[in-house]
Each structure stands twice: as C-alpha cells, then as structure tokens.
Length: 603
Image (cartoon, rainbow, N blue to C red; front, top):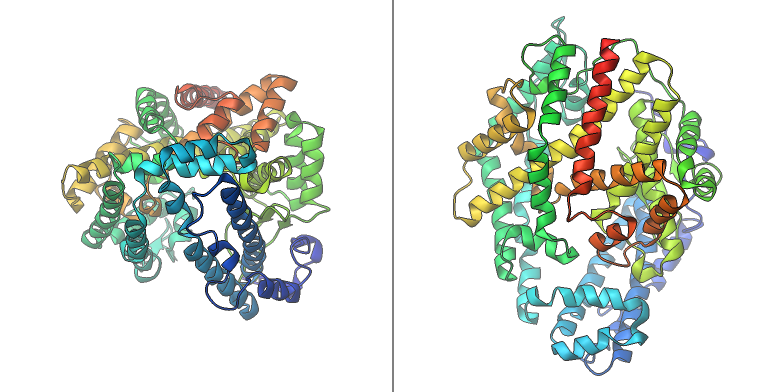
C-alpha cells in the first residue's frame, strides 16, 4: 500500500546498469551510431551481400560477421532499454527509449529477412561444401540450423507472403489477451465469515492457497463460471490459433502441427509423445499424493480448489533478503567454489539483482542480459518461501548465461528455451535439499516436502496434462473435427479426471479451465516445463551423489550455451531425453517424497 518510489530505493538494492551504459545519454549516443544510414536501408553494409551468398564461403563468413555484429549492438541497446523501462514503466524517457529500440529491432528483422531464403535457395552441394569448410568456424552451427530448415522454407515470394500474414494470423492471441486481461470482470468472493474479497487473476492464486475452504471454493467456482460465460468466444479464439498452427505447418510441408513446432530445434516428436506415455504409465504416484492430500485435509473427496491448500499450520517462514542470498549461495556448494564465488559476487558486490518492489515497477521475476552485460535479475522480494526459491531459480538462469558467454563466442552463446529451465530448476533442487538437511523442526520439514511435491505436481504432471490436451486438440483439427466448446470441455474434463485419479470430485465449472490458459496460444510450448524439470532433477541427483566428474560434466553443459541442438547438449551432460530415463526418475522421486510425507504425518 505504501510502496517507495524508484528514487527512494537504496542504491545497493538496485541493479547496476553501468556495465551496459553509464547513463541515458550514453545510450542515446550509441543509438544514433548503431545504424549506418539515417534512412532505409539502415545497414547498407549488410544489404550489399544480397545476391552474392552463392559466390564463395568467404562471402558467407563476411555476411555472418556483419549480421552478428549489428545484432550484438542492438541487443545491448535493447537490454538496457527494457531493464530501465521495467524499473518504472510509467517513466516517459524509458518508455520512449524502449519503443525506439523495439521499432529498430523490427526494422533490422525486415532488412535481414532475405538472408536465410537466399542461402537455402543455393544448391544442396554448394551448402554442403560451405558446411564442410573449416574456415566457417563459429558460424558453422548457425548455418547448419538454417540448412536444417531447408525442406520447410518457401521461396522468397512465399516467405514474404507468410511474413505479411503474421499479424493477421495472430489476432486470436491478441483478442484472447484483450478479453481475459481487460474485458473479463470477476465478481467479489466471500470467505467463511461472509466477508467479501475482490477477485482478479493475481488474487486467484493467492486465495487458492488459503486455509479457508469456503474462500477457496468460492474463488475457484466464481473464476471458472466467469470464463464459462464466454465459452463460445474463447472456443473460437482457441480454434483460431490452432488453425493458424495447422496452416503454418501445411504451408511449410510438415506432417503435423507438433512436428512443425519441434523440428526447428531438431527435437524428435518421440520426446513429446514419450513424455505423455511415460507419465500416463506412472500416474498412480500422482493419485497417491492426491489421496494423501485429501486424507490430511479430512476430505472424502478431493476438489481442484484443494490442490494448494496448506497441509500444516503453525509454520511461518519469513526470510530477509540477505539471509536468502546466504542460503542460495550455501546451497550451490556441490557446484564448486568458483561457481559459489561468482554467484556471491553477482548477488552482492556486482549488483546483478534489482531486489524490491517500487511504484510502477514491473511485476514478477526474470533473468535478463546480453553478451556484453552481467546476467541481471529482476525481483520483487517480499521475504516469503516462494521468493527465496524464485531467487534460486533466477540465479540458476543467470549463472547459465554467465558461464555460456564466458566460454562461447557470441554466435553460439544463446541457449534455446528447451534448455532454459534446466539450470533454474537444478538450483531450486539444490536449495530444497540444503534446507531439508538443515531442518530439525518436523513441521517445517513437512512444509518443505509439501512445497516440493506441489512444485513438481504443477511443473511436471499438470504441464504434461496440458501438453496432452494441446496435442489432442491439434490432432482433432487436423482430422477436420471442429473444436466446439462442448468438445473442449469434455476433453479437458476427461484428462483432468485421469491425471488426478478416483479421489477427485470433478466440479462441472472446472471443465472451463482450458479456456483461461495463455500458454495454449504458444505452439507446443508447455511440454518443455515437464522435460526441463525432469532433466534438472536427474542431473541434480547425479551431481549431489557423485564427485568431480559429475559436477564438471554439468558445468560443462552450462558453458556450452547454444553451440549444438538442445537434445545433443543434454546428451553431453548425460541425459538422453529420447529414452525416458529422466521422466521415470522424476516419477520415482515424486513417489519417494510422497512416502516420506506419509511417514512424517504418521509421526
């Protein structure tokens, strides 16, 4: 209620952006120099290669050098602008700088759009000779990625047409956001004492963690009944985005929407389908935890609004920021002294972190940066258990970025989204194990176990259920089956009942939950949460149980950045996501933690 202004924040609590730019004026000066011309084409030095990429590998190397040089300068400008904007999103100067660099980035995308199609129009033998030329050096893998897409790249006219249609084809997502974020208004909800509470997207998750079951039920029911009122509109919007995915897949000659989403990163569709089949085979462990939750809460039947109800009272965990930093640093001891010291400097002396909330600061948390900056962390730290683990999570991302850019050249430093959640979840697991080992209080131990199980449940089981819903809806549309509200409701209800098991009492309004999930508008994205946590938990177990070999193997994985396809990089770390070992290991861990919880409650 009484948030400080940005100017009132203490300097040590704010990130230090001077490694990027000393001040706004230096950014403005650099922005003026980043283009070679004041009018389009803004980068004639890149445009001069157009029509010449087939002449020699030397031409291709020179073009890559210019391309990445421009991109690197733009990224530095962009990162500073977006970080300053997020400090105080109403500040006019920051808004203006962010808008300017965003627009220039789009212009760069337009001016470089000819590059891949021209390369891919070259004869296969010419491309093969380029790839085999040792002089290509750091640009070999970026070229390999482009060549990998050759079977699904259209001619220049076709690519231009698809690019021009992009804005129109993403209307469904924009309409979904406008409807759910702005137009949908929720009624107030009441607690067990008949006191009214305002309901919003943010309040929804907060109320569901309440020990007041009346408030939880009212919240869940009201929230989804509100979405149900728009079921026809939301079904059309979702069908629109699936039709867009289907159109893009067919236009590019893919066999399915799933293949179109996974092929660019060279991820076999078997990784996706094996995740679903493995979780289905081992779903009993999730049912067992749901049964335990119902038993501890004294319920004959479990409802979805009981999913995050606290299982134990009298545990009040409040952690000051510096204590959180100390805990996170202590927890990463298995990764060695160098990793610890680097992280400690980043979180304290080098001021990677913007720690606390202020008026008009962006909500949430993230790790961000570029090749020429520290890996910054935005927090809105309030001292909760969740905030502690969020800090560990973002620190994992930041150390991944730090190690990658210190080992890899610029063209190979950026790791793909498939790998992004591995390092962050790995650090969360280290923190959990550190806290569990150092906790003597039985209530606090149960609290930690509950939080861990709920985290795995939300990231692994729930996201796999989402992935199966997404796969089935795309398959149905590919078979020319209309995605009606009734079909979507029935499909979601059947999947929920299967994943939660016989203890679940399914409330009718819960079938509308599919209609509020924004991730369904990003093509085959959610499965990566489940694969990421699976790989992270397996790697963390190996490092904690192993020695220098296992530790060094994991640190080497972090330092490889985006130098290969994600499946291959994980194989180098010792995890083959095509074989299902990581998924089965996660199922076994969940089962083991559930048994530990059962014993703790018996005590």
